[in-house]
Length: 334
Ligand code: SAM
Image (cartoon, rainbow, N blue to C red; front, side, top):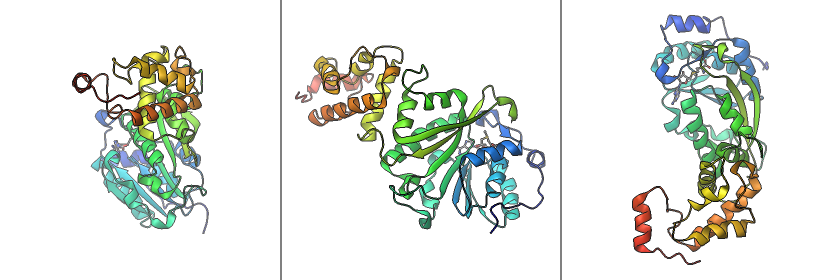
């Protein structure tokens, strides 16, 4: 079979938009990419798709969808929330000889793992499976989606039951910069640690906002993620997530401010223990912490939670929670 697949002549994406009288909805942050070369470039970033199983999230009028089909995957599933795009996607499905499975739904609530064929599964320690997640979604969806998917990667759930599934997704340029930022970079944030400890993350290229219709106020970056066989932090996700969230709550300040909020005010010694046992200077600033520093802090926090029942549930901003803590004098036994 040829590597490339040629779709029969079809109306252009612009004509599809006109044919179905689709106006971009601002409330869904719809910005369409009509340039076929850029759509192909996004799809090239995903790697070899031939005979693979591909899932495109938010296909809209189908520009990226066409570029994926040209790469000759075995099957392409698309998940689209806006029903106005379904007829155009059905047209494309007919032209492709029935290769597309169209799902009308919200990707944030969709059980993607249920539609992946078992035959494509690979063990986690093997090569990455021929399964690909691709999408140009609104930024209001792509950021919560990646946070949800990172947790799925950490717990090997969702699509990651099938091995180290790769993702190629677009983000607002500033979000990409945070994802790839290394130590001492002013963009270093919660997203840098959470992404990098679980994935090998690569910024592919950035598309100027003016390439989209209508033009968004920001530039758009294409990012490729490959889950790591061994995460760089060997601590359950929930502890890593909480420590990282608290520490980066005060991004410009010394980390002692964020770490302090992990513990009830009547247990200041726990904050001291964190720094002593993790061997970290409390005056360090958040963006100066390496992933291995974060890993040690998360490991110590997990130990403190194991030794102090109820500690993980403690949340400093929750007044009832704090009051409850004081009232019950939960057994903090360090
Ligand atoms: N992929 C197309 C392109 O590049 O031209 C459309 C991009 S547009 C920025 C985002 C698309 O995602 C729209 O078609 C929108 O309806 C769809 N979408 C938005 N939220 C979604 C969600 N929660 N689940 C699935 N699709 C969604």
